[in-house]
Length: 437
Image 1: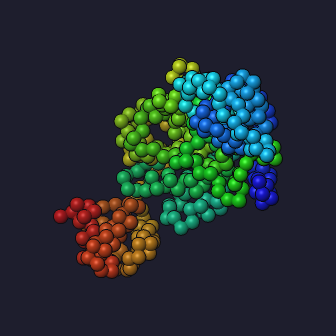
Image 2 (image 1 turned 60 degrees about the vertical axis):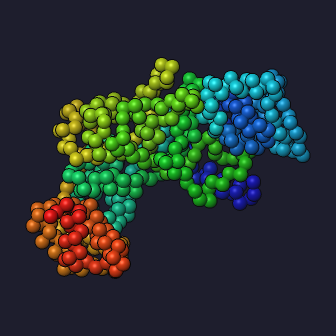
Image 3 (image 1 turned 45 degrees about the vertical axis):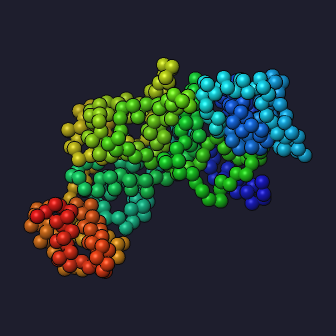
């Protein structure tokens, strides 16, 4: 590790006081000794021969801990030294014939051979330390996060207050009013970094938590870890990330809200709301799922109330896991059509997102024209609002400007001409967009 990297890691350790520190002993990993032996044996089986430093990077365990495990495995004739180098780090290990037989047995139980997991107790403790309720959103921060976005003042205030509450929110209104867009913009209001484990272990069963589609590691001068040693300030079994945002839509089923056990690999994937812990979980297009909204709401009522969820392994073992997530429901349905009064009381904020004011619609239209390189004229927007929207009684919805401007641009590209915002072009786009004859 060069001097620059050492300084970078030191700064990271100082700037993240709640970030888990690396275990100094096997006991401090929170994992059983037999479990770690199995994990190391599987890793060696997959790698063939491996240096201590390579095993350390794969399993995210310090070389000093691995030396303890490998020493035991050598005593039990599970592994042996294949080649010695100039230093201890250059020593190469491989499994014995007996070790390979043991590895085959271990792989039949579970094929997981990645980063060493963390215990459920350590995971729960870390989630509490970085709880979403510890984050605050003030007026100035909201203005900064939403700078340049056209959002009604009262909706901005509702969103800011809702984020501070840490409670679920319900965005409802007509299709195209911008509910999904607003829900996605809530990520701008998230602050603070969180530690996400690669995996957790429950009853010796591995549950993978880190998901690159949900978790975004902080990539800057903080994190280039070249090797793991006693000077490292952070536990590499965890990844420092931005607060997560998970989104699901019509594909959501009840099964997706439980552990996903892969019968081939013999380990689990965490459900999306667990991956979203310490962040936001957006359920888009509520009402379009195969399951009914009431079924879905009944699934959430206990976790929302108690801030914990109950999951079950395929062997029947049940356990409790933190539920520290802001649920955001986006739907075209009214609150009364979705859930009963008992559930609606637990929905902290019901935020109606409706048609836009004319001034807001004009502002969005002008911005979209600038983004798409289509000349904007007041005459064009006047015609669109007064002659098309009003004549056909179409509400001014947030989605309309982008969709219409892009149609004008697409048609111009097809004809090989520069896009122009005039009545003929708007009429053409309008007929396509609204299937108007």
